[in-house]
Length: 164
Image (cartoon, rainbow, N blue to C red; front, side):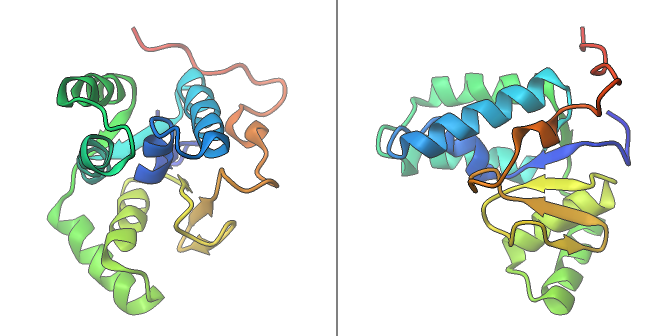
């Protein structure tokens, strides 16, 4: 995946819903979204998102995963997608985002991670669908109007080659 590509930063809630059967519709959609992003090799996460995922699926969902199950899932994401570090520059940009765009600090970290790493899209239910903040577009994959085709390459262009 290259900076400025059609990459998608996957927020924690999308990952967690894939493991949480308490809302079958969201679980089904999350699984479809994650499969599509993985198939197209367009996924990215941050160290923050991975940490939040581990805590949520082992402690906060109705039928929590074991730590070993969560570790295996997390390891799969690390091996499959780009993982962005939480750097001092991302933190400073997040603080600016809190001030300038009135985002919560944690949401601003997601935005700043995408912005600072050239990821143009964030998949999350925590932002207004379609919002564009300084070049980062937020898409809520759980809305009825969300079209999974957004996650596919443009017509006539093959998907990128698979990672080995």
